[in-house]
Amino acid sequence: MQASNLSESTESPLIRVQRSFARQGMMQHLGARLVRVESGLCVISLPYSGKVTQQQGSFHGGAIGAIADIAAGYAGLTQAPEGMEVTSVEYKINFLAAFEGGELRATGRVIRAGKRVIVTSAEVTHVDAQGQERACAVVQQTLLPVPRIY
Image (cartoon, rainbow, N blue to C red; front, side, top):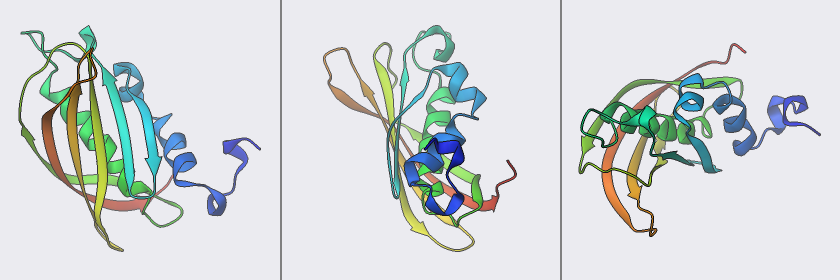
């Protein structure tokens, strides 16, 4: 059975996030991909390219913030009521270090999923060509469940 034919009540967190992620034009444009999804958790990777750099050649803060927002948001979506999506109300980001090459990996987690507000966090790490990981940024986010309109 294809994911698009599944009813809302039988969608796994993975299918729910995959369906929404496929509609993310910005993530597609930047080359981001889903790595892992489970209840309360989402991991997204973003490879280094000219699409995601700033003038000095390192990953742009906007790209870092975008994947952190999306990873944390999708972690929250896995906890949102059926028939709902989520939208960011706010997030606070701390940039810890700048990086070139390799890829960024954003790991979003649910801190608390309430009926009206979902609080999440994300850790963004840089993974170099040798597989070494270093902290890049941290985010705390507030999400609002909203009706899914597609």
